[in-house]
Length: 342
Image 1 (cartoon, rainbow, N blue to C red):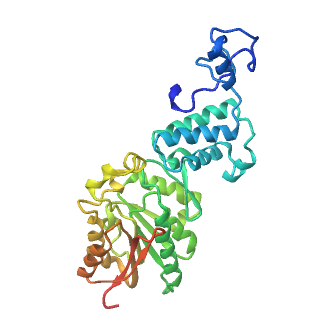
Image 2 (tube, rainbow, N blue to C red; image 1 turned 120 degrees about the vertical axis):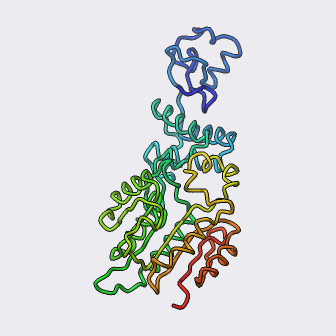
């Protein structure tokens, strides 16, 4: 049972003029308060009264107002996306359906969605999926929700793999270090059908989600998912043309200041990069060269303000940093490096 203050209060038609009962019936049907309730279709308790007519436009407007009060970013967009998901319509089709009256069950289902979003549960968890590089991935609390900037990492990865010429009898290979929901590894497999992709993660629950996503996109046969702590999960003879990673990079002390959608719903282990956020950057710089072919590349996502420190870390480990790639907001976000002397 959703509390009445949670959005919006249940819409009930009061008896009398404008309702479904005879005039003047009901304890709340008289006086100016009763007339106001009849005018706006609201009643405190149902007691057999019918749910008011709520159109698509009214539901969007009231939902957006509620979400705005809860501090949710882009509240109108969020309301539209949730209603479009509920009605199984493309979002833009809502604009052609503003006068459509929602069924009682649809109103109650939307109230449930909006209540959850108002509690700052991520939209992607409510819907159950996220679009990543044009592909729908299942998401849950077991793995980080893929972000738009990580699409750039995946794109750089598949562009590089397409340039790699296989040396018979071996195919082109890639390692996704810390795969989470499997997004980067799956996109690489889809974009490079001749490549063999390995993905590792310390979380067995995250790997189960990645396995589900790989099956959804038909790449399970070419995606080897290995449980374990980074490179320790690999067979000793493994070697790759590309090592790619979106590792944890949030400084430990900053996690509690993140938005509730991230702080309270993403796994802390997928966020926490140590005191300065660079623990995994150091680890990759120290360990990755052993697993990379001479002409291979290492591609790593990193956090705000970490570019120059990370560049120095890699230089100290005898890497050549070829490029620092900016994200959609023009912040440095991806480091691309090769082994020195190649």
